[in-house]
Length: 271
Image 1: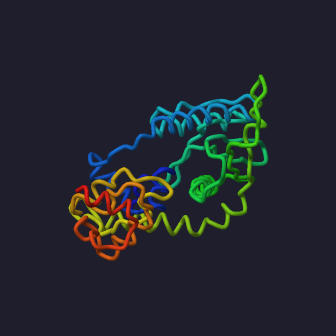
Image 2: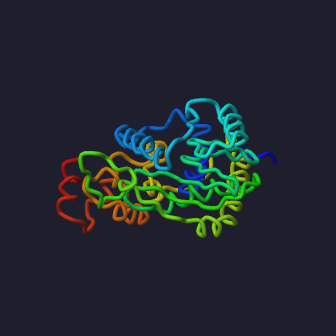
Image 3: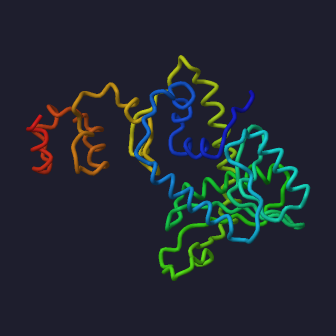
């Protein structure tokens, strides 16, 4: 079996829900992008600031094709570049770009930059996947770290990026997750081999549709639900909506006699 091309973002999406990769491959026109433009822009700005954390660096343009980025990385490593941003690597069709790669004679260090003020589990999965790729390519990965926003930093006239960011070493955790990552990659490849274009996976909706990120295929996966339904109730917590969903109380008609908050029943009555 030939492994599918799997980027670090694709891997992380599959950690959330393995069906996302199938949908991205065969139903991509059904994706509905959320209003995340400002979030992406913030992430881009934070990423650009973080590139200067360790002084001068060489950047590999992110908009170039993976093979070009990989070849540029190889050349920069050969030339002994000390800090490379967006360094790109491929192992057994598993691809990643490292936000900041520190390189010296003793090995390399991976720094994954996030525009968050705390570390989430998915960030650790992201960085651990990068460790998987680089270590299997034979690199001595000395350190894996998450770079994130220090929300206690108060800016003076001049921005101090060394105070703006926290850096947390997660090397030991990344190493501990290597067996899990190998298992996940094997699962993803088997999953995509079994489920071709005409064989849609049977995967029910759940809280994973919104955790850690809202899935762009929510409308596709709920297209057969009655309209309106429990998920159309404004203000109701998602876990409460899913509780009703799993009880089979899905349509507004199903919910009319339910013991739920009056403000939710008013929404149902209006329809």
